[in-house]
Every structure is written in structure tokens, then in C-alpha cells.
Image 1: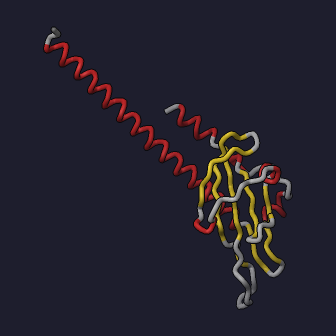
Image 2: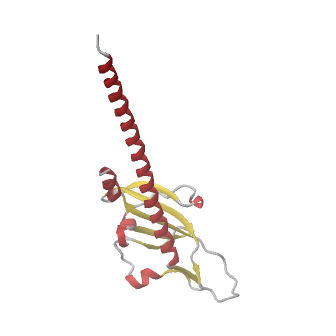
Image 3: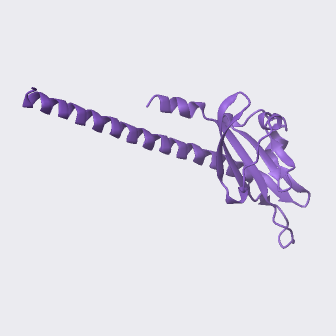
Length: 168
């Protein structure tokens, strides 16, 4: 027969351990969700900034960064990779990794942004955001024109985010 003191001590230890484990799991889940949300937000910002560099004028749709940096970009700052296409699917600009890889287009991209995680090239887990956006109109004032739509996919390696989560 065990004493009341040892049973109470055992109950307190089990209860404390359970509370500690559950609160740690909840905290980890909240940190993971917050970091993932910030990561996704940065991808959306990158896609919007790329869309701001696409202009639609009488000559068609042009990507300004391709003209200033050369069309054979390997990646964007922060290791981002991107592909910008017209609504008919023809490429306007893309980084080498996305040119060499065939990306399976996200379903129903009109509900953008759409997030996916995929294996691309040497990157085991790449987070992708697919968006449909409008390029900057550069038509003379009063000139009639159709509103153009472009599709942008931006991807970034998840390894730094996963390394941060591993330290939590």
C-alpha cells in the first residue's frame, strides 16, 4: 500500500507533465502557423512587386526587370524563383529553375492567392504562391484597351523556415 504523500506526488508529477506537454504542443503549433503565415505573406508581396514590373501598353505586355537584368536570371533576391505568363499561358519571364521544371498549374487560380508545397529541382520543399493579377497599364489617357491579366507563380525554398522550426 502506498502512502497518501507518494500518491499525491505522483499525481502532481503526471498532471504537471501533461500540462507542460500539451502547452508546448499548442505553442509550437501557434509558432508554426505564425511563421508559415509570414512566409506566405512575403511570397504574396513578392508576386505583387513582380506584377508592378509588368507593363501593358500598345506593344503588348513587357517585363521591365527582364530588360534591365537580362532574361536569363537564375533567381530573384532571397532565393525566390518566379514565372510570369500571359492569360494564354505563354511565358513573359521566368527564372532558370522554373524554365527547366514543369510546374503543375494550380487549380482554379482565379481564387488567388493559392499556396502549394512542391519539390522543385534540388529543393525538397518549395512553397509556391499562384496569383492572377493585372499588369500596370501604360496606355495614353482616354485610349480604349482591354484589361490584361497575368498569372504569376513565385516559389521559395522552405529549408530556412523548417530549420527555424526545428530550433523551437
